[in-house]
Image 1 (cartoon, rainbow, N blue to C red):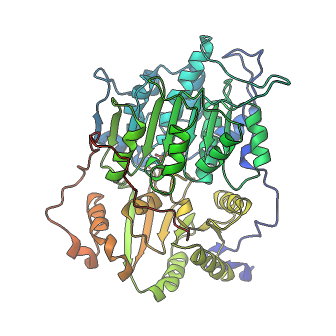
Image 2: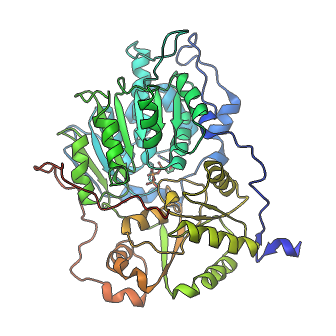
Image 3: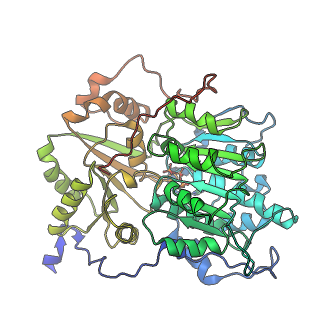
Length: 511
Ligand SMILES: Nc1ncnc2c1ncn2[C@@H]1O[C@H](COP(=O)(O)OP(=O)(O)OP(=O)(O)O)[C@@H](O)[C@H]1O
């Protein structure tokens, strides 16, 4: 047994030998039959277990109650807004309310309290709330409830293929996201909230077998969850039409509008058959929203767009204990091993800057018998999905990742995030450490700081103070007594055109 272990970690089995995994887009959704009526549709115990079981959910943690003290700012919202106290106040369709109960959500989070009623009133919104604070359910619950209520009143045209008639799938809700793994995750949330409803969610994303995805799309996709490249491709092939879309969501909106994706988003939203009329509702969500991206966002939103901010834009939760360790590049491996051996084994994500470092570090730790896997942009999609599956199931509780895994991923019991390579962008830092301490749970983030990271020091110091974290001695010089905290707000709608704006971030080939 001794050669199978290092410290308290047990070497992982070969999780790649099984090929096995069916593509995420093939995962089962509730099968509605035209003879069913709402409320009388039969339950599907196996699917219910898969979607709602205790193991499949991230439970809220002991600090959930602290959400009650968060400051919420709403600009240009409805004058008669009554924030929700409970989900009952939202008058959700009973089938959706049942699904919310199945998720064991006892109370809405702050962003849900204010945004759900605003979304139900049809407003466009730009919403910024901390990582892990339930932004996905914030848009899925009201939109799905709204669509199901319309269906019940006979006011929703759900389009399904008719035999021998040419068919284009025409979604009603379109959710666009930056990464494949995030698309898969939101698909699961959509499978949950559409359980026992006639709405069919479908996910399409790059890297996976297009044929399998086309088959799913061909059955009808009322809720389409997509990464931009694959969506554009299927639109160009005439498989998907956006002519019936009533709601568009840009999740991780600041990333979707940054230079890497902005042209594709423009092509999808502005140069397609998507009806850009008053009845189209556009929603943007993120935990970070740089000012130049906010300016650009207005190109896609209505003039009466409402801005919702929970805490400060780009802030993070004080449920994460942040430790910054100063060292030299050559000391990183030794320090990492020391940390892994001295902390109790727990699900740990290690972030690095480049695909090469991810491969090297994965080999190095695996050869030392640590149960590691890795995920980055050069891995095949099967490998990416298998790594993530092994991490989630605990077969490989150490995941080494590049920035492809920094946004949005919601994985149960990630106790420790280690920034082996600290990034020099504070928003990226906020997203990375946000993989731990979700919905009121606690977590630890350890970052290796070298002289190369000095550009990050002022903003990092500000964030540490704001979250009441210890500021290490080597960062004390960056404490600025004139800094104001927790005040960063949304900018107002710009009066000049954004036509010549160019973002600052380009798709990094190293991820
Ligand atoms: N009201 C609620 N009560 C308890 N848990 C909730 C509630 N709303 C959402 N959750 C759960 O909280 C977890 C985090 O939600 P989600 O992934 O939507 O966070 P997020 O705000 O989008 O985070 P990120 O910014 O990292 O993308 C999910 O597991 C979700 O099921």
